[in-house]
Amino acid sequence: MIRKISSMAIIILLVLFAGACSNAAKEIDGNQSEEIEKQTETGKLQVVTSIYPLYFFASEIGGDHAEVLNLIPPGVEPHDWTPKSKDMQTATDASLLLYHGAELESWMDSFLKGISKDSKVVVKEMSQGIHLITADEEEDSHHHDAGNEHEEHEHDKDGEAAQKADADEHDHDHGDHHHAIDPHTWVSPKAALILAKNVRDSLAEADPEHTESYEANYTVLKGKLELLDQQYEETLGKTSQKNIVVSHQAFGYLARDYGLKQVSIMGLNPDAEPLAQDILRIAKFVKEQNVRYIFFEELVSDQLAQTLASEAKVETMVLNPLEGLTKEQQKSGESYLTLMERNLQNLWQALK
Image (cartoon, rainbow, N blue to C red; front, side, top):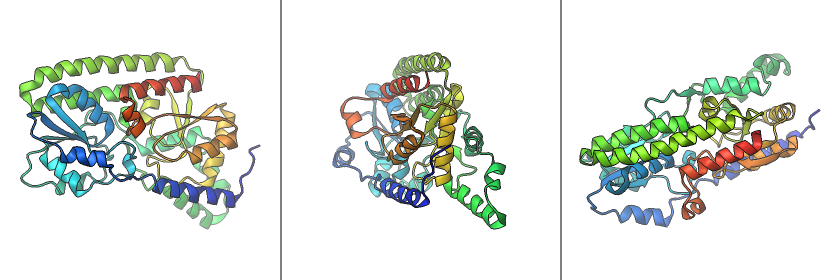
């Protein structure tokens, strides 16, 4: 039997969590602003990206012929970020703007309207060609895996009013994204290969003079991503545990492509507030399925993951969704590849 948490304790926890999430949004730091202001005519292709993985791919492929700037600075959670006028000016002055798409950049439509009509920037969506996962698919898997069939949920309630409340809570929990698309493609090396190819094609189209260089750099990056894919397949194929319990529903592509099942505390947006009953249900699932670790990420509060781990008497571990680097990771030279390798190490430790 699962130890019951009092309603008051759960309410206090969720209020504290909401406050922690709201504090996670940070202003662009001084160094980033200076970098924007110092951009000069270098003769290089000026590329602006919307998220860190695209920044990494563009930097690797662009090499000596591209100057790449990521709009979102280190330490800022992308779901918390909104562009400012100076970001629009940066895009206006660029030659190429690469964004992910798949409903990730909710600000993009209004952002593009703010770019000067005289700008020659070419805008490209990078998630084209990836078989996208809808929130409906992940939601069905989430509830089934956690032992939460909708009918069972309703049997615990009395009357029509209770059923309506249940539906309202369900919508709130998933942030009204019932038909949304999961945008977190890059956490799977298989999808990352497609993103990298799209970046290469965009650079070559914008700067055909250096196509040969972009192709050569892409070939090197492709080899690294293919090796990473092979390592994920071989390592995760040998694990006895296939369930990953995560704080943020950001690992659907990783789960789909490598035979895992994702159960998340929060929805696609890490600021979504879970219900007390969700925490209790997942704690039960963790115990029944012998899950040994709850995964959390570094750019948002780990409070709920720690609470769930305590309730289920298991440990916590980082699983990085690679939406961005922390300032410390940037200073120490971490990259998409090193963090993906660390993710695999942590997955192996948790699932072996």
